[in-house]
Length: 119
Image (tube, rainbow, N blue to C red; front, side, top):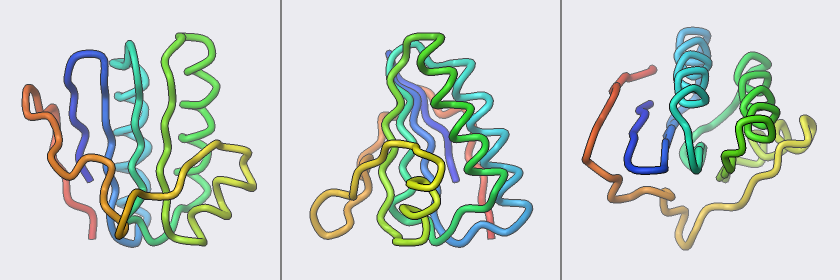
């Protein structure tokens, strides 16, 4: 999991199956991203194999705050279980690009605010 910031964009990328520690880390990353975002908050779940209740609640909070703070929330998800969880919470999302490519294969490198690994 990592959070990246560049001008007008905050991106949170998640990969793997989230356990409780990973879920907690994602909630923290999303809370920080919501505070920092002034343009577009991208949540890339393309390589994520599952989301728990806390992660879905954090994404729902990001959706609610995007309307208040006037930033755009862009969620990409590929795994059918992740897409189903997002659908159930009425969180708009898109399928990944060609061949399951991550939305940010070459992420901006201006500022990396945190890099974490969830196993």
